[in-house]
Amino acid sequence: MQSEADDAGKARDEEDRLRKAAEAALDADPSDAEAWSILGLLLRRAGKLEEAIACHRRGLEHAPDNGSVWTNLGNALTEAGRLAEGAAAQEEAFRLEPRNRTVLFNRAVAFRKAGRYADALAAIELAVKENGGPTALLRWERALTRLQIGDYVHGFDDYEARRRIPSYRARPPSAPPWNGQSLDGRRLFVTTEQGFGDALLVARYLPMVKKAGGRLIYECHSELRRVLSGLDLDDWRPWGAPAPTCDVEVSQMTLPMLFGTTLASVPPPAPLTVPAEAREKAARLLGEREPGTLRVGIVWAGRSTFADNAWRATRLAPFLRLAEIPGVRLYSLQKGPQEAELDALGPAGRLVAPLGPHLEDFADAAAMIERLDLVIMTDSAVAHLAGSLGAPIWNLVQHVPYWVYGFTGERTPWYPSMRLFRQGPELDWAPVFASVRKALHDEVRRRAAQDALTATPL
Image (cartoon, rainbow, N blue to C red; front, side, top):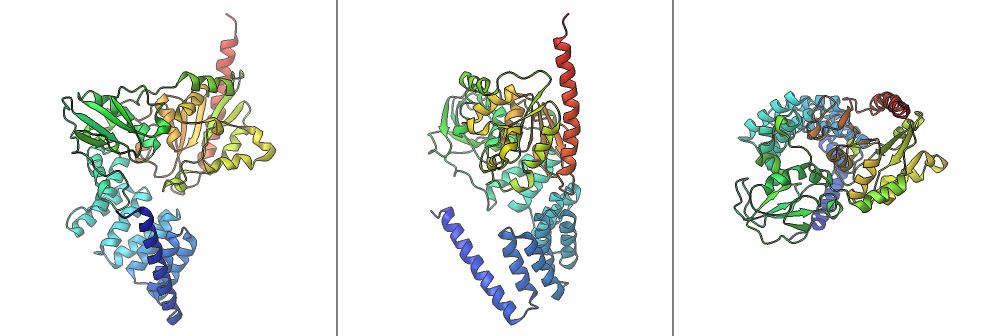
């Protein structure tokens, strides 16, 4: 079987061939618009977005009516966060080539990423018509759009198309799929796909699966094993281990569809387990809270390998402004390479207590969160952890966030204890942090008044 490394090597070879061909074409004719656009496409894949945009613009100087160049420009602009410009470029491509299937698809994606959901759905339906039916990629785009606006009934149905898109990565099937009906004692293997946050999100369905009357075998990341250990399951398998003998299987991300989830019927989060030894560690590290203070956990980035992380993450610096508020004490729950930003603070590092080095798994993180007054963070798995614990959490989300958070308002039915602070279409975090600082001032005053009331003798 061909490995991912083999695929990556072939992709690099093909990109090298395209680059050399485009450069040779431009040596022969500097006005070759297609060659300019190929260079732009390769630069975009390498993450050099501004250079990519400049190459596409140069191509359009020589071929302003080339729809393919316009749609490539639109992709680069959207990826660079210039959402309105990206959508406008796709509209121009559509005007020039209204039946080009690539243009139709790219136009729909640009609308969704700009938060223009009605336009995205209309663009998808036009693309479906031109394709003679919904392709897997079109169904996937439609799923993301429908879920974002809360159309779970149709959205989860389309979400199953993920299995047929080229970028999908999950274990191959090892048994017939479960259809949600009674198990009558059969063995069901629940497989894990996507990240830690997704596993925490849909763990709420496992007790419902158990009620179907079978033997439930759950594939679990080792980092989540302790915090999910209280669930009534029959057997556990480490993530990525060979599939067990079973009668049927189901992916965890299919469970919301099988249980007919709507906005009004989202189940409560799964009950989590925080072991005594994790609580003892947290008590030892955090001690007792000083009266009149607010202990705030912070996270500014998720996994760097997650494709959308650059959009949802920020840096440590804007969180440090929260330390200026009298009474606020910051505690970092950050894990991974971004922890290096704490080391770079030097003497100012005393403003943030680093808990990350003490977190061996999500159970340790849960114990820390239990002893904090509030968690403020950009979206990542810790948000799902805090939300599942019912802990107060302020989640700072990108303009078009994970579909769980919808597209408007401060609340999500998936996590009642979570308050959402939303980025605007300009993708600027500054107004978000301004709102957070104001809200945190209010929270400190509220907590100080509460402490004073508690301290007043009867």
